[in-house]
Image (tube, rainbow, N blue to C red; front, top):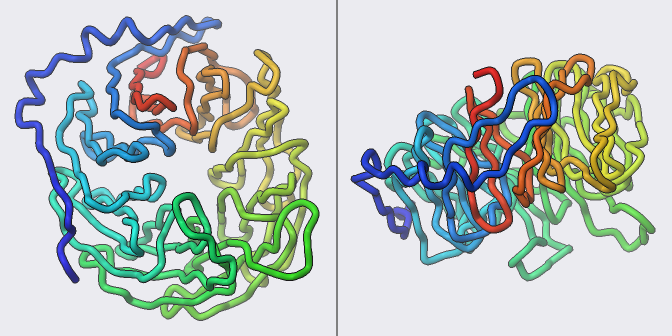
Length: 385
């Protein structure tokens, strides 16, 4: 493997940079309830739109703004720790971490790893196919999805995308499994099985959705255990328990698949378009474009609760909501930051901001982090912390 052809820039004077003080007043926040307020801590302008939630790891926040270098910011101050640039395009929605290394895709069908503390290159692996969704990080193994169709790629719907299993430490390919899909979503893993979803080309037209194929693969060699096909379109995300795999595609349905057999267990209408989903325990959470937030039972697909966001038409959840310590956090299309009780859906607090985000937040300890369409990363201290 060749070393990464990239540039690391380290800010050696970050402890002395007090840029956060002047920026605290820039975040306009006024709580609308009695649970306390988000406290602005710092902001940082990355120079490019932030299209994926920031990655919080160790004492840094890592962001890959579109068209700009990867930047690591100090968790407490927002000062730049290091940046990593590359002569080749960094696919900005591919970042993932195992706590020690940061992984991401590069134009030209390569996956790279750098040190999360310093930004120093560790390894680079040629896959031969581009990856545009983040790998799934297992115990020492990366499961990497690939794509023949996506932003910045010359579309080839007849291409057969592969799933790669790589050693996280050195990037060596453990196995690769070719699929009949031309694009694959970030995999999921549960109970020793790897799940990957995508869409495939078929001459039979579908009025709404697409030819969807979900595969269950052996983590040992990538051999197929079962395949499930439907007309749901490209999966927005996957969440798996030991018994059930849930996904939502272009069609407005949440689905539950038996992880042992690949049989459809339940199918539930989402009322409207859904950008992404997240899960915790036996519940899957998502927001639909009619402003309703849903919690659905994984075993049977029944509603646990529903919450209708009261402020504004189409003020829907951006990206996936974030379940953490019994609370469901999300950012809305109009810049509201909200927290619900994850068990019963009751509102804990709601705070309007002027953030024009493209995706959901990251919650890490006492901080809520979100990037916006202008390239600014915002850090807030959560109420009560």
